[in-house]
Length: 127
Image (cartoon, rainbow, N blue to C red; front, top):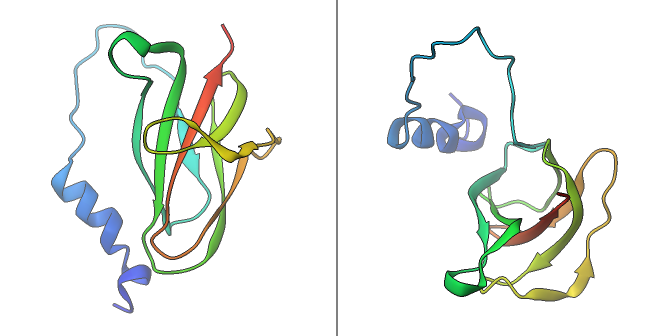
């Protein structure tokens, strides 16, 4: 019912095309844990990967790619439980963007999106 945004079509499509798989565990139940969360249903966290490629792998960094899926202008918070010491916008080749570093705030990283905009964020982790 309602618009595709209200009906959660994008989330349902991801659930259909990329279903969760359960794996039996032999240890006691683990507490719930999430590496990332996004404050807006209009923002899809599409990719999480190690930064760099080939000989330039950065074991101390990850890249996350997000996009705005509802055709709206929105500000959203990206939160992570990873130990991030530095965050910056980067291009698709993972080079830091001219905008420089993103401030690390208690709510996470504040990201601004225009309709269907893709953002890549380089997160340098503490050891």
